[in-house]
Image (cartoon, rainbow, N blue to C red):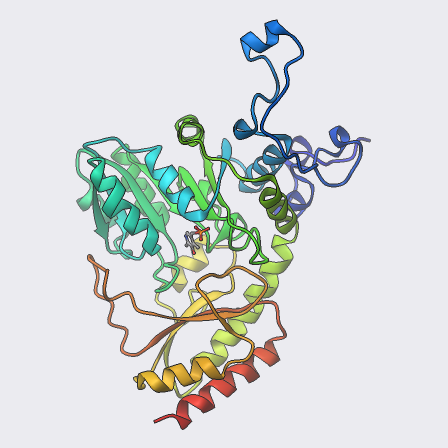
Length: 398
Ligand SMILES: *Cc1c(COP(=O)(O)O)cnc(C)c1O
């Protein structure tokens, strides 16, 4: 029997197996396990007739190479049924802006969750506004009630669940149903869930976005955005990516493919450690509340249970009111948790955040200083010892 190293063979396999086999095409690649990294701009045509007719499997580096196709194929296999195609762009932020541009025209109205990743809000409030597209922000808890906010010219609803700082869950199937009734496209930033833990296309999403920079890359060494689309949305999306001239360098694509192969095992560990550490934090006297949808106490837990297949390593907490100096002392005392604005890599991270300045549909007043943690692949006992160091610095600082 032929060995399975491509999408045709991968189709009927479980997600973890698809992560391993999809997009490799070993038979076409001289038997090598991994696809080649092709550095390319020009493609040579064999004769004048083919040149004039643009008749070639690959036409130009920007329009796709065996390397970019390998990652697109692998991601399509992992998204599974409902995903017609995947486009690669240079960052998660570019994935958000390109996906939105592929859907809207001047005079349209769109709805975006108030809990959205902040640069998404910035794109809507500046470039989309300048192009004549109006944005309203909605309460992430709106659920089916979002129907009331849909106008005759509402072209798209942009969801993200949970919010990547404030962790509200959303009833995405209900929102998608309301949007589709009004003929609006549903876009989702699914970076937190990844295609493994949130099956976007089965839940009514039309275009699903990943900051590939995060868990797909997984090693804090690349920038990448991926946009997966259903049959209806894919042609316009592909055309928009091509017209904007977007493409990704082959070395970054290769790193993403390499990261993808271990996504399932990494996520399993991120999930387990993060949940145990979240439970430990929830019992600390310094902590007001932990925002993690997999915790039974979380207001979004029922939706998470119903719609998600897992939780990644990212969650937040609110400390009981404490002076700024004490919170800084907590952060500065940590030796394993780095301070930096990203997540999804193998290492643990923490940031301070405050959404109050830019929310427009909801009020952010959590009752104390808010911290976001990314739990990496370190030993969880070591991480807890690190957090204990932080808490003792916090209580020592007046
Ligand atoms: C990081 C992030 C992005 C943007 O990804 P970049 O690759 O950094 O541009 C988009 N959405 C979410 C939820 C993110 O966390």
